[in-house]
Amino acid sequence: MSAKVYFSREITPQKVLELYKLAGKELTGKVAIKLHSGEEGNQNFLRPEFWKPVIDYVKGTVVECNTAYDGSRDTTEKHLKTMEKHGWNKYFDVDLMDAEGPDMEMALPNGKRIKKNFVGKNLANYDSMLVLSHFKGHPMGGYGGALKQLSIGIASSFGKAYIHGAGVPEEIWTSDHDSFLESMADAAAGIVDYFKGNLVFVNVMKNMSVDCDCCAVAEDPCMADIGILVSLDPIAIDQACLDLVYAAKDDPGQKHFLERVESRNGVHTIEAAAALGFGSREYELVEV
View (cartoon, rainbow, N blue to C red):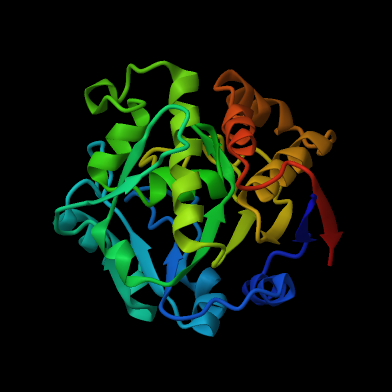
């Protein structure tokens, strides 16, 4: 069954909120807002002001987890300072979900590569989640979108190493690459199951660098902005974004962007996720 993906070429904070409402899913209870807080020095991440209307509308709490690599977000103290520096605390309640251990261990009985996931323990405090993703390239995953937010984004610092290492955290940077991508799909499936459908996904195709917002030194965007997408299906929304990149044949930066995606076999995360059955690669693009 194909999913609906709402799409607008107009990229404004108000349009994010409009498309969120079109998705028709009311997020109830305590709402977690998963987004990327931005590595210090990164010029491409989407700022608090951009996300403010939709976060205010759902009355959510911005949630993040520490990183597993050196930088401005690898300890609780540094990450909280970075979030404050980037202005998140100015507008929103902020929760660093793995600020203190122990992690929440999540069983993944249907996982292809990993059978458990480690997430920030404060995830237990939330009833629903709005996943706000900046769609762009990524040095390891090929691209970053909804599936990466669900997996690496919600994983604790240890959990990130566990996923990267395909279950062997000591092999964080040396594991088999496709096994890492499949582990991301496994972890994402666990989060979707945990929230039992109480999720909405927003992907914004703006500032499209080949590098992630986790890079302190990132390339400037190589492609023109494309638009905003909203869906209840994380697999469909990521597939739709990739399809829009492939369709942008007149964009001089398309080849460079796709080289990053294809050289890392980025589509395999989507393939692995679809095989797990928590969403569909088939979708109806509804342009607004």
